[in-house]
Length: 436
Ligand SMILES: *[C@@H]1O[C@H](CO)[C@@H](O)[C@H](O)[C@H]1NC(C)=O
Ligand SMILES: *[C@@H]1O[C@H](CO)[C@@H](O)[C@H](O)[C@H]1NC(C)=O
Image 1 (tube, rainbow, N blue to C red):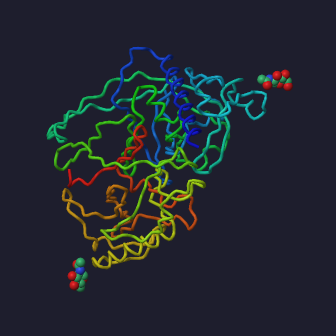
Image 2: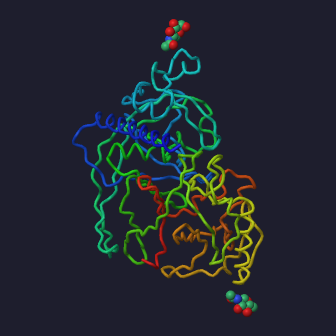
Image 3: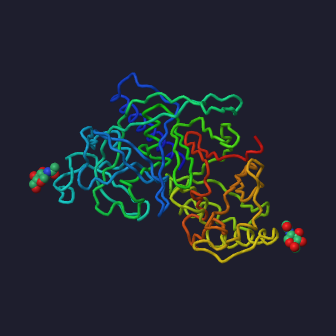
């Protein structure tokens, strides 16, 4: 077991090394190295998926890809061919191809299914997966130019800057466009269930050498890190680390975000996904009774445990956890004289907003929902509620069913600012501000 895993890591490193050398070999040598790369995120107001906005190809075209934290590679639907003069098929006898499929499979344009599309004999065949419908589509691996933007450069002393004129940053260095590898999927229904306007999926899985985070790391010599800053209808994704500053408009200061870390766990059956070791859940200091078995990952089946998934709008809890969770929360509400109102689907505990004890902005917020990790690390999830309409807020957690694959799936509403550091195998989340 140990021996086979060691050899698999060696193999992976070798492939990654080949892939990096290959990527560098194609590049002009005088390119700048950014501190980190940023892209804007857009959100579909209906299905609430976040999409990364990328400029690629020649002439440059803006495309949006639905974010998938567990995806192996970025892919586009190229049913009617892919229009760009700078694109090239990736050969099946190439390092990238061995990263994406084992054994390597070569495209043969004789197959009727591929005939109608842009097809290249001996291109690398890939199978892309739609994270919503789970449908698999076959296609080719291609590469094309992607334009990237580096993060603005901030000057920060002791974590804070007072900047009445708001001139606290300089634009980051211009980054030379690079060539990136995508899957080109041919199935006509490949985009079903994805955000409106999405041309495909941006896979940022943890293990794959072709996941966007691996590709940016290889192309720019950055650490395998990405971070998400999510808002209701937009957001930002950072690759390679960053200064992670945030602006407090009311106080006219920017400050560096303070992150607390907990290790990432490996789920042997779901290697691309981001699992963390939640040991207990507290609501306003009271522990929610949860069966320990649900919180651990079954190494054989991959069932159980806690993962982070941006495609889920609100954190999903296995039914018994959900019931216990709602019970503790409504009991707290009762004790605080918060009035319960009719529930609003898909939520079950809803409250009259005017009776909820709100804290004033800038003051320390009391811990609301806390996730407890080993070594006394706590993640205070401030956003336990969601605004529904004038006068109603609901507890923003949903029932994940009685036999879910994963017991707790932390969704976008609860993620706040979060960093995934694959290099150091850890997740960083925003620590309680009143401690810094
Ligand atoms: C395509 O089909 C022809 C005839 O069936 C065959 O001779 C040829 O080898 C095939 N080419 C490939 C690349 O499979
Ligand atoms: C709730 O209301 C009761 C009765 O009016 C009062 O005695 C109690 O102090 C209130 N509790 C809180 C937390 O405000």
